[in-house]
Image (cartoon, rainbow, N blue to C red; front, side, top):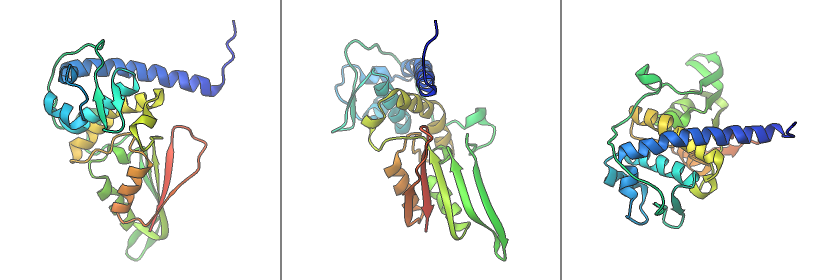
Length: 240
């Protein structure tokens, strides 16, 4: 029997399968870290409250909670940014620490994407017409500092192209199979990598508003969305 499916259908299926596989890992992690136990019978809790009760740092709890809500295991209350564990869902414990770089510790600050520049030599050194951050800003422990340094290396009229996963500004907009997959990746890889470098962790689905705020904190006056037909990317052009 031939199944009639579009490439978009296949991509959706692959994303859902990956999100489900990573969700299994996060379920076990929640047991070992005491996250389910922290939520049990407690009513609506914020990420900070869950982190305190489980004895872990808040960014880990935040991304884990969002992944579980996207998977349908937790109820999310957007008005208060809190999460509730429904009665039927199970519980248990572990403790977790303060950051782990990607690649098992081989090189701090390593990111899955690349920071690249296209530029020309000037009297004061290399100045760049274009600097790109491709799926990497959210992996950095000091994203404002990274963008500030990039801004300082631009030639007059130059730009930074920021490519990030397609997060919505509110958690509710990310409670989808795609959001589940990205929140899981954020919990297991991106947030630990960022915390191993500093105290900031944007999370993989930072969303355009938070990315714009980060760019403005780095001194960029113009932040403009770039239209793209790539469904898994959010692109922003940053200029002075």
